[in-house]
Length: 426
Image (cartoon, rainbow, N blue to C red):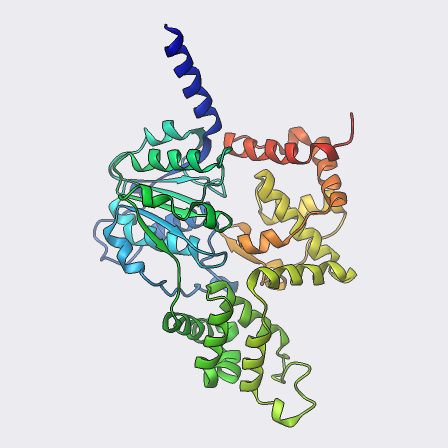
């Protein structure tokens, strides 16, 4: 082998090593039934969608398994004609749910779904490999999803990220959907301009579609119906405009209703602070005022977490959120049993009963796993003393908790590497 060939081989090997990513493969055929009408999904097919929703960490249901309503973002219909889609938008814009809706509309026409950078353990095949090797597995009847792109790549400079995107688009598949992680929006939103085969779309909601969302959440979600009827419906247009100008995302709407509901007394009285003057007690005034007061989603959860941590009586709830954050970072299962045991072992506190109700602003369930929206997760800041407790537990129970899959082992190693200075010397 010539010197030039050896150098090229070493360069390719180095490239493969820095572009290892985790992936999951879901076989669609066991879930597919030929004789059902378009748009009707059997329980088995819904089971497949539940698995995919777990893989990309998207919320489908509320408390009591009530379906989460969905309003299509602007330009959604244009995505159906493109085999390769690149989505981007701010945090809380409904990016992952939009990805799932694209999957829902195409799932009956594919054989396998590849999920790159899965957030949970799903599928019949789960592993970690160079992007090139994964791309070589694709067939023309597969669907490929990479949510929160370019998460899971070690090198995220423009040239490397562009090369990875080019690799993904080099194979003909039924559908390729790449959704950009919001924190990278200003850096990489223009990537598809260099690849005309991609249909690139920003996830946005015009005033009418956003107003439809405010109405849909209020009139279809059982725990919000009374609030909507009393405080929102009369001034729907005004409230929707206030929220749209603040931050036009689905998460804003959910935050608004949760905040309004939390301040609404169980007996139907108005929230505290609206009783001193009679002209301020009308429910419609409360709905408008709370819309005006609502902070942007990122600030909302930072404030909420600061409030939780300041209350001694809520410390067990804070510990619960800490453990969930740790499970996400390390790649551990977030089942009730596992989270409860970890919280007791690390913090010596007891997990809250029915946490998905008590912490409904933060949590949702996908199957048996607790999940948290990315905006909420980014608001949970692990202090050094908290990390020390976690690392002490990890080091003392290494053989019991170390993950078995290669993708989880990678997360585990990254967590230890980021916090190596906090590990007690042996």
